[in-house]
Length: 376
Image (cartoon, rainbow, N blue to C red; front, side):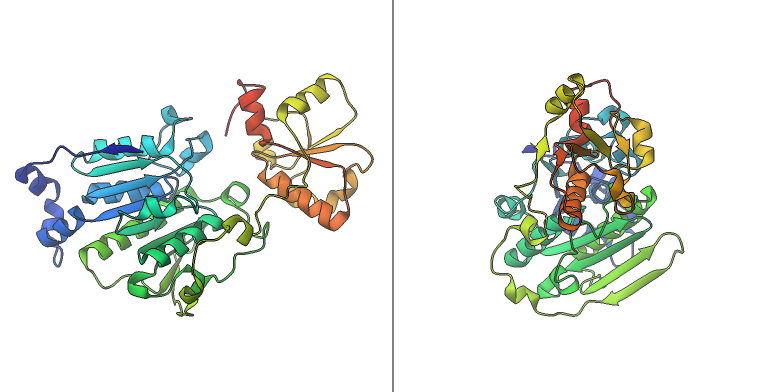
């Protein structure tokens, strides 16, 4: 963990920095002192986490934790405004912490460069008042929700997809939690992620700003929050919906943390056959008789490719006849996730037994075989 203790500002400096808050009706110096004594953990320093972190640091929240085990990639920069081109391949948590310290050196910032899981989540969240879910996957959302319920902490949730975003405040003063809204996760493969379905960059800023606004209201004692409500924002039509979330008492069933990958149907199928990028390179060099299929989108293949036959994931069901059944077939995508899901579908629904997933996808190829290949 990378920690930073602030040097401390003079009273005159604080008065000048937060002067616009001081004159706000119903906010004033009392509200600012509440922010200063507050602590917030933001899980995810990506599209949502970027605006959340920027605005909480600028507002003067006294202690901010940043949890993210990822590094910056070029495709992040369309929406992850904490980072610049010079930050590519740098760790997100530590890089983000540096940005916040430059913005406001008078706050305490913790950079926690790990992937949050059932083993470490309680240790990570225990010293923070509020948890912000700025993640992009269902297992982590359910994990953070259950940990918040068991720790009696408030969770500020946000999610984005294509042109639509959602914001809610869960488990505030024992109110409804994420499972009251979504008791069960969607079936694997039924909801594309941002890599597959896309997301409008500015939408991350809109929803992240809403999340930061909820945190500030919670810390300053404003009762007009999204506790027990879901705000849905359509960035195309500029329409919003506010939905009341019923308290189904699902919290009574949350007794302990579980295997969230298994719960969300993402536990890796240990019977799935894989090849490494080194093994694929040898097959190519030996001119072996195999089929290589790329299930990425055309715009991804335009950035970089390794010679596979391009059949985008969504077109596979209509093009099953193009996939050989009598020789080794290696399927790849950017990271191995989409290709793995596609193999599971083909095996379960089309009876294939000769499919191999390229472990790590084209990212692994770029890292281990061709360092000059563009990354995205």
